Amino acid sequence: MYIRNLRKPSPNKNIYKFSSIKNQDVVMCEGSLEKDCCYHFEYDPDVVQYASQPEGFYYDFNGKKRSYTPDFLVNYHDGTFEYVEVKPHSKTLSKTFKQEFSARKEAASQKGFGLVLVTDKQIRDGYFLKNTELVHRYSGCIVGDELTIKVYSYLIAQNTMKIRDLADLIGESVGRVFASVLRLIAVGKAGVDLDIAKLSESTTVSVI
Image 1: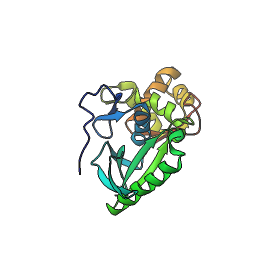
Image 2: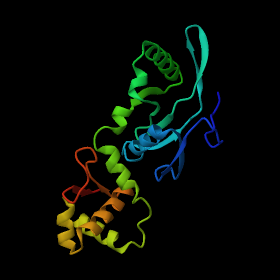
Image 3: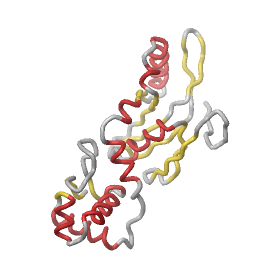
Image 4: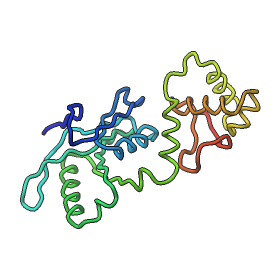
């Protein structure tokens, strides 16, 4: 077994850093696609923690022993763990890749873990990534943020309502209330459907 260290500088790699509240640490990513994948892990309620470049393993392919390091190891609330391989869709179409990935999947299964393939189509299509990028900009502690605490108390009383209606009820500008809602989403105190549409003042938000 072995572990790759992305913290060592390399002229051949573009290393990205993702600041994770869920992990309470910085996640090192080998490429922008892996960084974008982190937004999905960070705001997936089923994910407890995730790690990039976990301990690698060996697998057999065409009679040869090869080394492999998954892009991520994900820990879910149901107690299961799963390896994740991140790839551009165009690089997953060849027969060789499919055969090799199957061999890697079999080796992962022998270790007691699943191995799934996630492509740029799943990571970047739709609204989820753009919405979570926006939410993540507001991540951080809300202690001492009086407006956000006030917004949360009103939201508890109402349970579910549109952001613009919440602003009218509180008597604050939509922009300020919208920012407070984003902070509450980031710390897990409020929830919205991040897939259905672009976040806006007409978004319906619920208390968690």
